[in-house]
Length: 257
Image 1: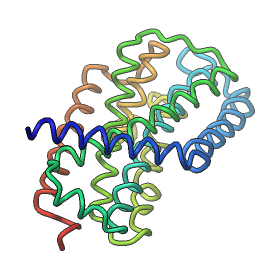
Image 2: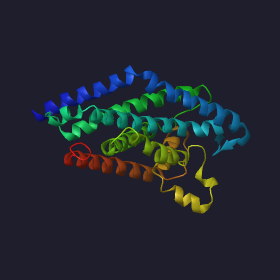
Image 3: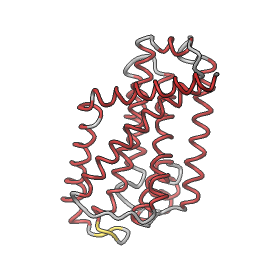
Image 4: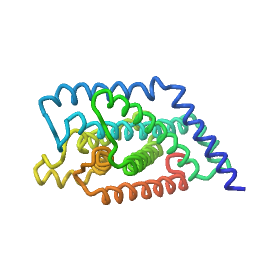
């Protein structure tokens, strides 16, 4: 009976999240598409002509996987943090907490919404990228699995941010001061082999580096890091962040205080 109840609750929550994304598509889908188009024009087309090749590929081709992954990461994160904090702010999170649905279902439902938005934007950015350069997927299984896992990681991270947020300003601090710098320093626009040895080692502490490089490997077949190690890091974050979120909800952190 509990399984049936949670399944219905999960479908309802995911449906709500999808409708929310679709209803305000001008805010959720269009802006990232415009932003990524500007990246392709400025960094890929204008600056890329001066840079030439990188990693054996045209610069536009080289940065395309990184820009796609960047759009997936930021939108997966942004959807969950805004949705769950909105539920807290509007007090309708209390309805979910007193309902028969489990805390795990609440997390999975919101994360699924974030993943769906992230993949939708990622697909749109991919189509935009194909208007600027040619891309062929060398390893389809790696491409699909790593983009899905990366989307889950940052959706879960957005949930953590939303749990601790007390006002609307709090949901923009992490994206602005943590997520954006890590994304730009995660090998989106360059190969870490170009960096001095010390900074190469520092870059290895950035989890986004592994996601971007694994995704680039899936599409182009090249990577600065071990793909097996990248999967290990990403799966570790998925398990760790889900466990953390579940513990936070069970304790009522940020909700029952």
